Length: 69
Image 1: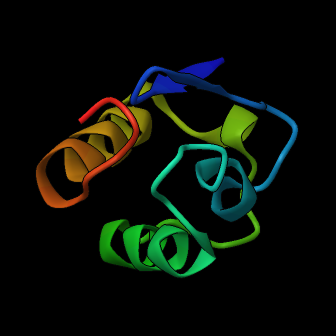
Image 2 (image 1 turned 30 degrees about the vertical axis):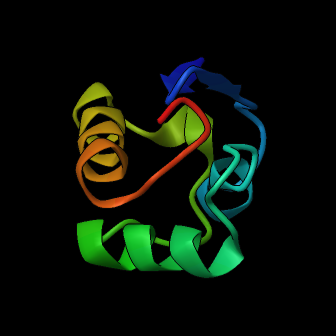
């Protein structure tokens, strides 16, 4: 299970949809994050490597204001 910005992302959802569970990240921002990191839109959270989850977490922490901020 990936935990990003204090939110446990559902593992069976696509990355784009799962990122919208974070308050402050909508579908447009989720697509921008995936495109920036080169993550395919059809990939599921359970298929992400630990390095990819870390990249997503770092990108959100540095570039976006989310619920904990």
